[in-house]
Amino acid sequence: MKTINKYFLMALAGALLSFTACSDDIEREPSPVVDPNCPGAYFSADNNYALELEPEAALEMTLTVGRTNTESAATVSVEVLSNTENVFEVPETVTFEAGEAEAPLTIKFPNAEIGVSYSYALKFTEGSYNPYADQQTYVSGNIIRIKWNPIETAIYTDGIVSAIYGVEYPLSWYISAEYAEFPDGSMRVRMLNPYKGATENPDANGIYNGYPYVDESMTVNDNVKVQIDINGKEAMMQPTYLGVFLNSDDGELVGGSAYGLFQGTKDDFPLGVVSLNGDNELESIVFGPNSLFGSVKTLFDQGRAGISTNPTTLFFSLDAWEEYMEANFTE
Image 1 (cartoon, rainbow, N blue to C red):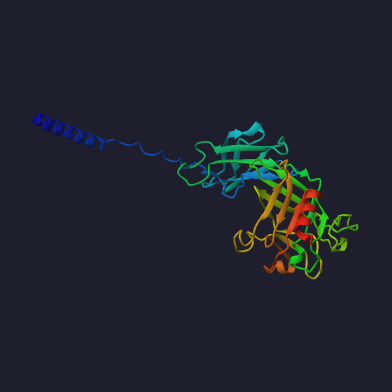
Image 2: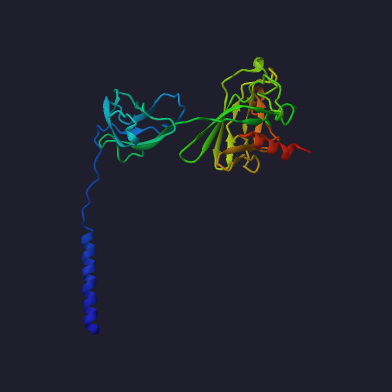
């Protein structure tokens, strides 16, 4: 029995050796050679494929297409892989003149509705690109026309200016504001000319109808839009020139979230805190101490600003504002 096993193992080893030897003789097909006339088309790395457009923006976008072979004129075919509701009108080809390294691909979407997200995916047809090059030959993206919804009540309390000038605090006034919601669950609030001058004395609640320290003669821009980006319970105010000045020699006021602009973490410069009411609607945004910065143009141009130690708040109902003021400022 042992002899049989020995011969069997020898035969098996021989078979394995023979198999291995045969595998070394397998011929592999060479990789396809790229046609020397191939344009080598690719999508530019500078393109933006995810667009959030204002409602009044043009209903089109332009992508830059490049090529590596620029010797002669060429036409590159574009294939549409996906197109939500066929809203995108994509040219079938991109044309290059001789010597031209880049050409535009303008995509139109005239029937895109406000507040709806649309997606697309494109690629170049085979033979138009070099499959071995490290370049983008397939792209996907989306567009949405932002739907802004008016906010009925918005009461703003400033802590920005108090970081620069010794003005009264707290001081609250009504502002115009609107909000937008996005498919990823994020939100955006936009304050419209929040430092527009007051035209009347405060109401019975002590709330002005504008900022009482400025008037038309101190306004340099009456089309200011201060954007607050909301993700979950966090809010970030984009640094913005505020359209007014308190001292003409100092220049225009500027303010926004300190985090991301100054070196430090969220512990150093906290983001704003977002609260919702029982109906899951915005109730307030509170930028606490050290959350925002304030400056004026002459100093900001030099990289100088002050950190706001006083909170800046935005309340979306009179009741919520009164509750906050009573809890924080009533002795």
